[in-house]
Image (cartoon, rainbow, N blue to C red; front, side):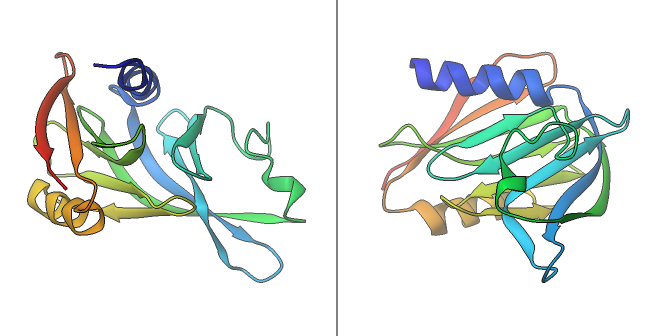
Length: 172
């Protein structure tokens, strides 16, 4: 693994490994009620959050709520923000990171419980985050291949109690 891969696997271990997710929090502009498609927060059972923000090729992660410490500087662009929650309850015991084969770019993240019965797939599209609930592995492969077939991708997988493994490479 190169330094970039080591860095993102450490970040995702730190923020997601064995965390119990209870809600996806979407932010909406108070003025026009439009959803901000470049940021989400995953709320944990204990009330903590994991913020995910994308502008460019790689997401930024934060442990802070938007109104506690605005790590993503969203309040500089919006007068008011509204949180909307979408319930999903699971413990993250399986993680997959989808990384570009040609660039140091994180394409997507798959988070699920041990038996993959409850899952989230978070797809990064440069300035947009697309979240899909309840995807299985074949759905994810189809989505990733459809979006990134030209450049190819590498998958890194970690199951609870194990280490990160490179499991698949799709050539572009």
